[in-house]
Length: 169
Image (cartoon, rainbow, N blue to C red; front, top):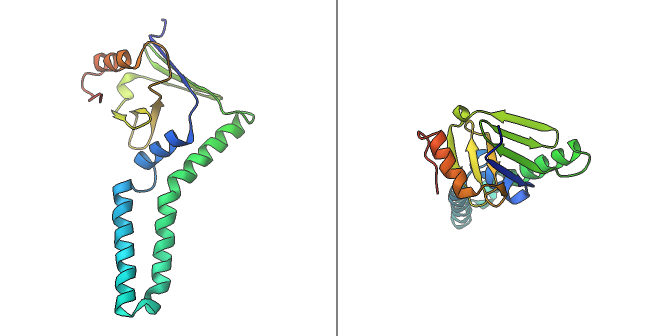
């Protein structure tokens, strides 16, 4: 059967970072902000109380861990793009998603076919739309990448296929 929708795009760092920040490793931005305020508050309190010399090694370790956790999504996105290029002869492959009876995704040497019943939820991020298959894995869709059909029609199609899912605007 002829697919009703076709989406083509090349994944970029910004989209991957957003995905890994939300579903992968590392805390979300509000958590990072709270951690930064607590860390700065502990440092200032230690300096005012005159015990900075005693706790400086601990604060340095906490700061290093905080920075590592904060920048982890950047590293994972960079590494995922690097591995994808290496596996596809140095070229970043185009992602091609066709939607019909099933959802088919081709990206270089990777081919994924999934049924609608496998979808757990749909999430709208700032730069993408994600069809979640589990807690941490999903199919990223670029709303601007539709070559057949439109993004609005696609959302309506998903609502018809899976009326039990909440499809965000």
